[in-house]
Image 1 (cartoon, one colour):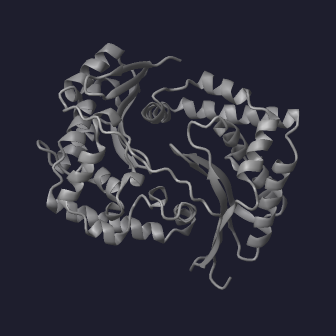
Image 2 (cartoon, rainbow, N blue to C red; image 1 turned 120 degrees about the horizontal axis):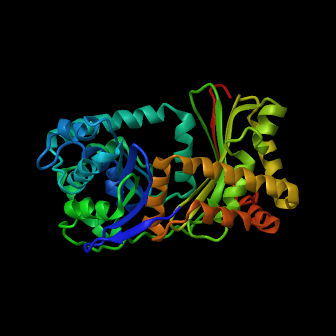
Image 3 (tube, rainbow, N blue to C red; image 1 turned 120 degrees about the vertical axis):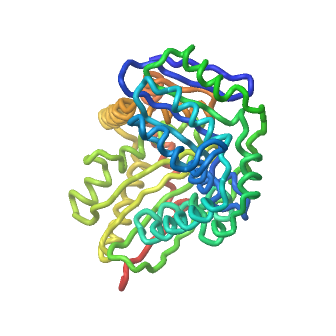
Length: 410
């Protein structure tokens, strides 16, 4: 597995892996997300992600949406706390049409006032729908709690008040400040020669004015653990336990990824699933997650349980964390955990869409991309002592925060 790299004169970076096949995947990712918003701009990055499909200098909204769909492709976009991405999957002969559209929506969108007002209503409905789903909302509320007062804790969707107040001038101000050419990566995994891909990208992106703004993100360094419980009108009680964690480039992030997977990964034999669900039947939903950001990260465990079982569930979670703090993994346990994580990574890499998006993110933030083989070597180097060290740093009981949505009558 090998990747090709190129940088246009205006600073836009390109990464590509040529593969044979009928379907190709390509995306444009910008190093801009909700944490880059000013306080008055809450939800702006996500708002722009919606609006870029609503009309350009030469296309109305219908024609933007039909450009890829009419050739049997799939056009989509997403916003995170640190990235905004437009991407498409399409039949391999249609790179030209896809790249032309990416350039058009990213740099020629006009943000018509009428479309802005319609999209405000759509996003407010999205916010209200999200608020009606405590199993989803609790993750964002937990990050807002542990990153309290910092932009990285802000909800990606924003709030109804901020969204209603957005003006076209606000949109263009945000774009000018954040959509710089040196903060953009175009990623591709598909059936096209690299020199042909570079030629097409240069055709549509090479004339874009060079802008070399840096991303100035204030680091988060004021974590204080908290335990908060709020009443919710729901049947289940939802709980999240967690802590701040390592950033993307930390040497210990693979060890934390491994122990997170061991605790509550997708496998049915994860420790938390075997304990809470299989042994005691306390919870249907139990998972652990680790999300690294550029300068910090978050580790969390989520439990959805009956109101009468939540305390025992959380006690069992603490018991599993204590075991990892106090006792190093045996040789067989460590080998099994590594093999399981490597297998899941390999399965993920089988999705060329996932690979393309992962490459874009890695190249955007780290200016490099690790192959699956390199990642496997990093995982294999993890020692039992390192796993225990990570457990004692991240799972310290006096550092863990808890957010509970108590079910009605709980």
